[in-house]
Length: 281
Image (cartoon, rainbow, N blue to C red; front, top):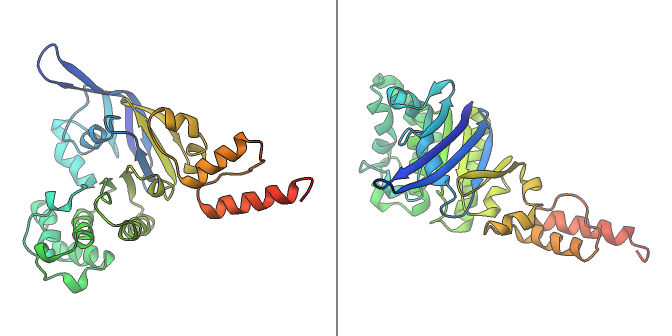
């Protein structure tokens, strides 16, 4: 389990210039959970990722990853439990060839050669990269590079995989395939996934959505519940899926739209039910 107890963090830019980024954050994420984290720029998402990967440490409070405290003493223990994939795969792809890059992390853990080979084979297979294992990274498409980055993260056998806006540079169909792959991997490996995103259409695919604003969690619930609170999301500068927005407007006009609306199929079904239940239906 990931546990944050009353965690605060401030960036120090020289006394007395202190910039709060996270404020009294309490959060628990179970192993195997699929969690989307959304919020405007400056809401604290990136700082949270850095804290969970032991790049930064809390100013106040405590973070534990599977019982291990996030501090300088346990930095490498934390990084064995949590892997991260960034927005731009070129920021983390180091080696020239696909297979070598996937092996880079396990090799740096000092694992036996047989175990490295097994981890690389498993990760490459899970991401469907067998046919391009010998190719140069520079010759790959953006989508392929992102899959290689995920394979490298998985080769570390993490308990948790953090995706830090990994789809923002990808076409929508490629992004959706990537999210689907990660969801399948999570279920198969019982691996927790934290997906930091600006895309509401991606967030609805996760079982839990955490909404951040000004360093605090303001909503934390299943996506249907979060995206029903349209006014609160708009107050903090966030959009909602079009179907949820339309349902909200129809309810405001007195049309009895029931249930949770996340997509056009939900909205169509709710409208059909409302028409059938109307006096003239």
